[in-house]
Image (tube, rainbow, N blue to C red; front, side):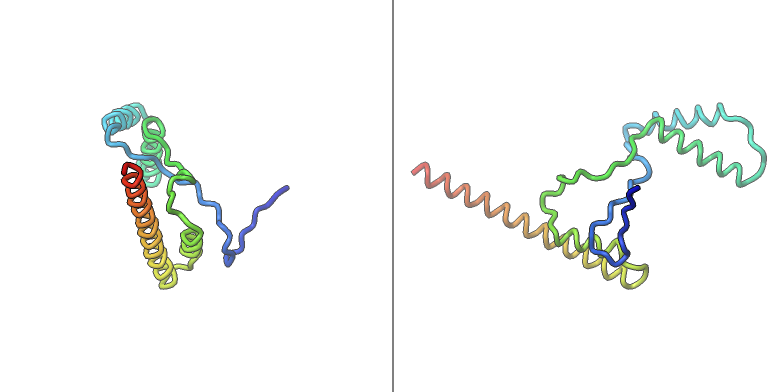
Length: 141
């Protein structure tokens, strides 16, 4: 039996939680509404108990979403070419921060750190493009 354990103070990457919910696509709005109306019209009569009504309503929404919408997925690991180890460290720190001022400070540091890394990455890419353009102009001479 294997058990993966991450202490709360560890800086190792904590595996991301599987995202819950569905991607709301405006193109599928009418399909979702039709499915939901069909489910409401075909449901069994429920008692007048408020908790049961709320549970049934939530169940109808989940069933309609599952039938018509795509579930959310984890982002592709190679999706952000600008992501660095610094981003990973800031993200881990922000996720593991306790609620309150520490969480707010860590979240702010994450946003500023990511903005800085994105800016640096874009700056480097633009300078590579300019350098490549200069090389092309020299080659044509």
